[in-house]
Each structure stands twice: as C-alpha cells, then as structure tokens.
Image (cartoon, rainbow, N blue to C red; front, side):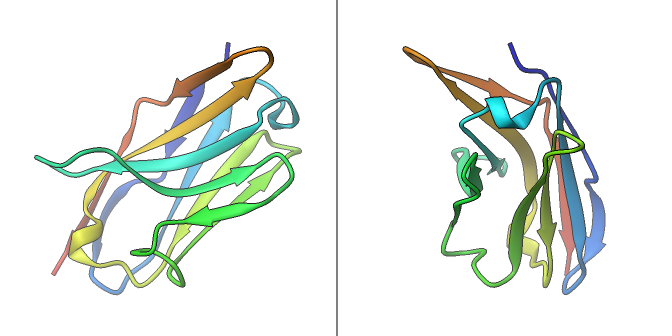
Length: 118
C-alpha cells in the first residue's frame, strides 16, 4: 500500500509559477514510477509528467519546457515545478504511484486544485 498526499495547489495569474508536492507513505525507492495527472472539468484525466525509480522523466507535449518533475528520496516526495502557467493548465492535479512486483498496483492521491487566471 502507498498513501499519497498532495499539496501546493492554488490560484495564480497567467505567467506565474506553482510547485506541487506529493509525499509518499513509503520509500520512493520501492516505487517503480510516480507521476502527475490532471483533470479539467468535462475532460479526461491526462498524464502531465512522470518519473521512474531510475530518474527517467516523461512529459506531455503541452507542458514540455514549462514543467519539471523531480524527486527527493530523503523526503519520499515528488515535486512538480510549474512555470509560465496558462489558463488551460487549470485542473485538479493528482499524484500517482505505480508499484510492480508480479502485477502492478496503482495508487492515487486526493488531488489538489490549480487555477490559473487570465
């Protein structure tokens, strides 16, 4: 089991920055991959960025060059630094963790709201 707690959402003007944090209840060395997803009203949940236990990263095209995912293994925390925010980045952001042994288990945080005003 992995519990994930997100923080750092809020209201920001277009062009501004926010940093989201996702604290895991266990060592992230034991987690195969963690990521950030977002879901805007009326839209499907989409991958924003992901990082593997080997520190490989992956980004949605819409956020490349603006968002950075990173991890701090000493704090069991994954971050999403969001710069140059746009109104279309407005969504609920969810942290996700995938743990694979024989099968894969997927865990989700409760979500944190990010609102970007124009």
